[in-house]
Amino acid sequence: MNQVAEPKDGVAAVDRALAILGAFRPGDASLSLAELAARTGLYKSTILRLLASLERGRCAARLADGRWALGPMLFHWGALHARAQPVEAHLPPTLTALAQRSGETASFWVRHATQRLCLARVRSPNRIGDDLAVGDLIPLPAGAGGRVLTAADPRGLGVVATYGERNPDTAAIAAPVFGPSGVLAGALSLSGPKSRIQAQSEAHLATMAEAASDLTRRLGGDLPHPTGGLA
Image 1 (cartoon, helix red, strand yellow):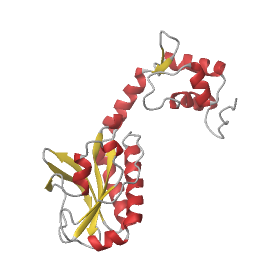
Image 2 (spheres, one colour):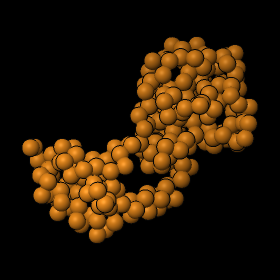
Image 3 (cartoon, one colour):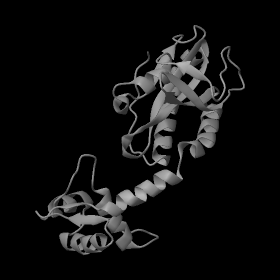
């Protein structure tokens, strides 16, 4: 069995304990010792010693059938992280980087009843005809951001692009951003003149997928964003 590589820095026991916790995947209610060994590459005796410490710290819990589950302390820490990391705190640097990289206007939208609200926006140096502002409301579901916010399954949506759907002269590309527990936090979007967005559509799709995934990770979410097709 291959052991977890020794770290150059830090504490090996901590890295191994984190590897055990990281062995749990979405949908795993519990794992057996054999499953933990197979996923981590650690010896069962090592895993049991580390699990004893994790159990004392309520980071792991041994079930009646001998299987192991994640412990309640992880939820507690996750909730603390979520409360300390509101989406607004991450938007300025994310939108600024996205606008600079793409050359287009970057925005973040949230749902507000039957409309979508512009929570934050960094304008492109190339202004567009319907340049909106923070606080503006747009009826749902028109536009790429609207499609994200009204999607039946935003987790599997990926990146959406619309051309002239809300305004005949503009186009937009948007992707969902998620917080803890897979909750939809909002829609990250790029917008600009239709011809310019179309000319760089492939690059913009990749840029948007990367930016949305990065913001999701910053918010404590963990969901890949496959690149979707053009709408």
